[in-house]
Length: 147
Image 1 (spheres, rainbow, N blue to C red):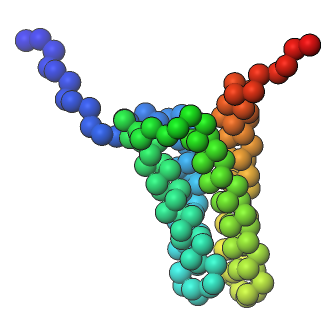
Image 2 (spheres, one colour):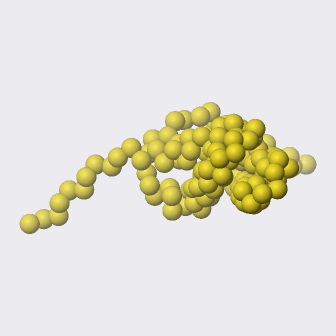
Image 3 (cartoon, rainbow, N blue to C red):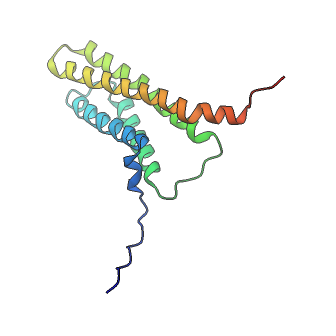
């Protein structure tokens, strides 16, 4: 009557979802999917970039959930993460503005609100990614010169 052996771990590490980075990625993905749901009804022109970026966010979250993530050359991971966050900020800000300019109904106003919230969330992600990942990597690559 001893302890039963633990089942072997699966390919996903769901503990990542408890970290601030994981929570931020999940929030971005949930809001992006909600925004896509609002955009599908009228099928406006900004649907394609928003859909592609949502798929990219899903892939980024999936990459973080893997127990054995693919190895990128040193410094590429933070730069790709920063690029994802910057492009998300721009794409969803444009989606919000186009949705509001295209129509003045309640659906357009809701889409504008979700797009604006999502672009602010991505802008916060840019700030956090730069401060926690890119700046330390740059400081490590280029130490300050002493005279």
